[in-house]
Amino acid sequence: MNGNEADINVLEEIEKLKKKTGKLSSVEKILLSTDGTVTTILDILNGKTAIKILSRETKKADKSLSKLCDIDEGEKVSCRVILMHKNGRPLIYAESFIPDAILRGDFKTDMLFSDIPIGRVLRKHNIESRREVVRVNIEPGNDMLKDIFKNETEFLSREYKITSGGKTLAWIKEIFPSDYFK
Image: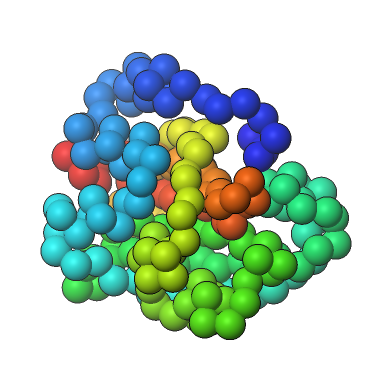
């Protein structure tokens, strides 16, 4: 799904996931559906959450990335992969794609290079924004995810974009094991 498609009905999509999985915990439903930052939810559940940057790179947007980020093909996009954790226990794996054109100064440094979750970066820089969930899903985990989480189950994911002033600030996919937050 891309940024140009209509909002999904998150409640309906979660009901479909419940039928596929047999059951979703209340925490899983909250993490999948929130239009706020998951960092705050994780902080409430586990204490202050930290992130570890697994990779970051800048590349030119192909057709797919240009649609996700609402930019032209060929524009630069910063890609950041992180692991949210508490004392080394992985909580959520996340991939984010951020159009370079919106990044300046300390905001750019914090968004790309600091070990600060994006929600906290936006708050730190007083940026009014909204999150629009565009997909919730259950998917088989790849070997990397199974190794990170030491888990063989299927994985839940949500994809959303963060917008401000009508512009896409970031497109994000968050993933966690389907039985992780029971």
